[in-house]
View 1 (cartoon, one colour):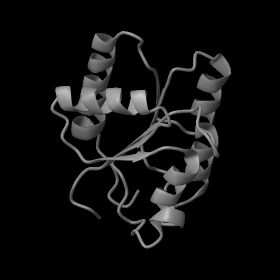
View 2 (tube, helix red, strand yellow):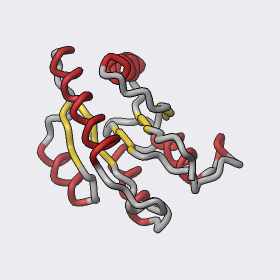
View 3 (cartoon, helix red, strand yellow):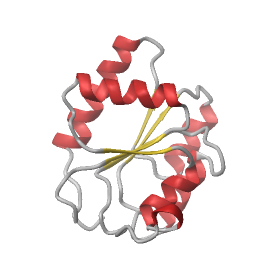
View 4 (cartoon, one colour):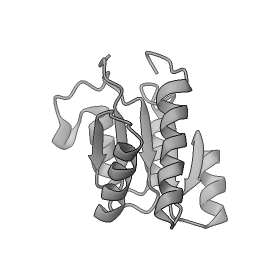
Length: 147
């Protein structure tokens, strides 16, 4: 397992990527962040396939921040595939989305999301949400080494 706690950010909107990275930095969350711009890239990263062929899939992220509205493979399908595979079924997945659709919330939890957070529109609220996310998932939460 990699010694560094990696965050996998799965987000297709470059503005939201920049905002999330800025919020992490502002909160002194210095973990390496790997950005996947669509669902296929996220799955390739996690399973060491496609453009990430040769990457050791045993080096898992500590946390996956998953948007739902993604090109190629949407976030709910990514989550479903993660939960169906023994190598990734226990990885912490936080849905971080602007979707206000109740069915997305219900389906996200039904598929095994650990948390569902709606992106606040206000930057200061977003900074605070990311601070709490980082504190809980990167510091307080206990994970399985072989999840």
